[in-house]
Amino acid sequence: MKSLKLMCGVVVVVSVMLVAAPALSGDGVEDGKGQGVCRNDGAWIGESPSWGMQWTAMYTSESHWKGAYTTRWIGGDPTLGGFFPSAVAFSNTVGTWIRTGRRTFEYTMITYGVDALGQPVYIAKNSGYSENSVDCNHLEFFDSAITLFDPSQDPFGEDPPAFGCVPDPSVHTATRMRVDPPCEP
Image 1 (spheres, one colour):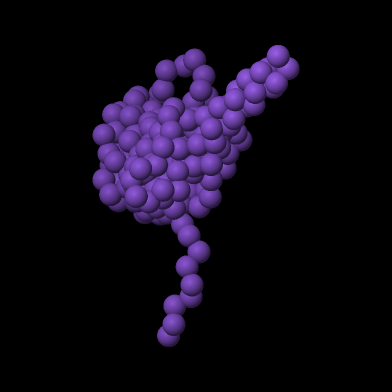
Image 2 (tube, rainbow, N blue to C red):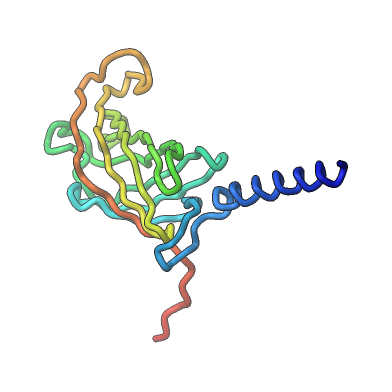
């Protein structure tokens, strides 16, 4: 009887390990048959063609299910088509993400449009979702909407956004940065 209980316990432990292993390890499969999950920790380089921007991002995980990231935008129009004529640059962007599937995530990020003195002109809150490729080295981002707040507002508060909410159907892409050998002159 004891050996049967021990055998059942071993089967349960092994089963749990087999189920949990993909969630802890990541795909890492390049043949298109990955069944695990992707972890986005690390550095990424991306582009947002419809916004005329390129960017870099750094992802960090708090757990398997959530984390944070920072992004630096390069290029783009901080006036948002002239709507904020005093804006001359974007601030660094910070965001949070949650896992929604093996290779899918939802995110929200905050960026400030700033004037020539570095003072905020508006707050932009982007929310959307992203999906990793099977090999976990490429991402596609789909912004659902950009909500625009006055700098004095709490973008997570109860007040409606001072400058409204606009749909953003654009698609952004990113590639995981890797260590490459130096070029040979």
